Image (cartoon, rainbow, N blue to C red; front, side, top):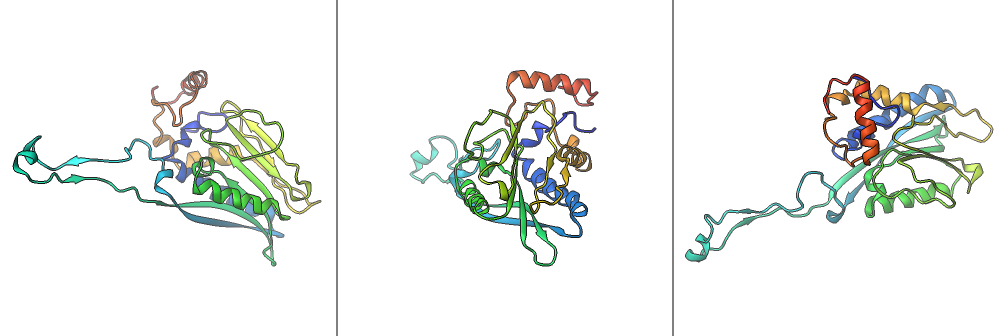
Amino acid sequence: MSSPFPGMDPYLENPKMWPDVHNRLIAALGDELSPLLRPNYYVALEERTYLEEPGELVLVGRPDLTVVDRGGEEGTSKRSGTPTVVEVELPIGAEVRETFLEIRTAGEGEVVTVLELLSPANKRSGTGRRMYLDKRELILSTRTSLVELDLLRAGDPMPTVGPRLRSDYSLLVSRAHRRPKADLVPFGVRDPIPTFRLPLRRGEDEPAVDLARVLHALYDRASYDLRIDYERDPAPPLDPADFEWARALIRERGSSTRL
């Protein structure tokens, strides 16, 4: 089935599924933009890699430590004097890969715009957030524009100055020639995903990016409906009112799954 939600499907935010969604969506956006930007620009799919420290890892449905007693029946090792052998798991850092897009000029390869889709590591304290904020600060100090897509309800939003409405998701467009001003568009789980204009060089026509259409088409191509269990709460969970809304919406759309 197609996505039952008018905008972002909150079930796609599950940490087990999000890395797949993130990488596919970034690639799909690149494919969407490439023909719109020819012949003056091309889209480069870039990647950053870093090691998350053990204390930063968030594993859903898995304990931090697994202990298996191989000492035999309870009390056996104490009577025999044989040491108890315990199997444990050691906390080991994990390599994290995050993809993003760079809009570059044809010929010179100058980076005009960076498009980022936030990951869970960017929105919680730790290596991922520190590295992202350092890169963000560097971009904002140059003549490169920034588009920042936040389709994750969990975690801390990226810092901005001035009033900020509380929202599930947000879209930030920072045009280099307007800094420090930027356009922030908050939206909720019940809202359609806003279309935005991709900033290029000042004075040039900016193509419209229909993020909702790209995401919904990806949902169909990737068969996410076969991977999502709509009988369960999404992770992170919705608030009760939004969850009841989601249940009614899925039923109304004639979902083949049962809640």
